[in-house]
Amino acid sequence: MNDILRALLTAAGILFPVVILIIGVSMVAVKRGEASHAGHHEEEESVHVTSAGGAAAKPAKAAAAVSDEISVPQILGLGLGLFVLTILALLAVSLVAHM
Image (cartoon, rainbow, N blue to C red; front, side, top):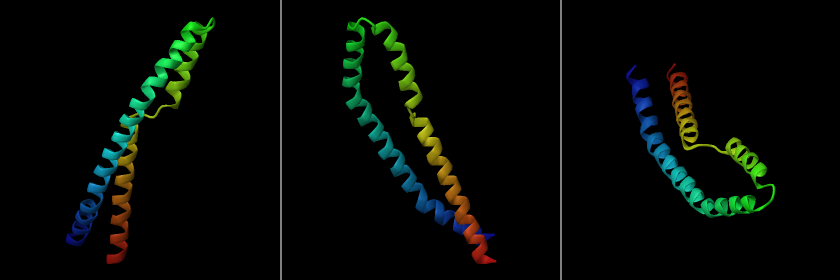
C-alpha cells in the first residue's frame, strides 16, 4: 500500500502544476479572445439594428452564438476529468508494475 500511495503522490506532484498552468493559460486566452471579440460584436449588432430586417435577424444571431460557445466551467470540468483519468491510469500502471 505504501508503494501505491508513493506512486499517487509522485503522479499528483507532477501533474498538479501542469494542470494549474493549463488552466491559467486557458483563462488568459479566453479573456484575450473576449476582449478582441467585444468590438466586433457591437459592430455586428449596429449593422443588424440599422437594417430593415434587423429585428428578425438579431434573435437568430443570438441563438446561433449561444450554441457555439464553450464556457470556462466546461473547460475546467474537462481538464479536471482528464486529470482524474490520468491519475487513475498511472495508478493502474503502478499496480501492474508491482504485481
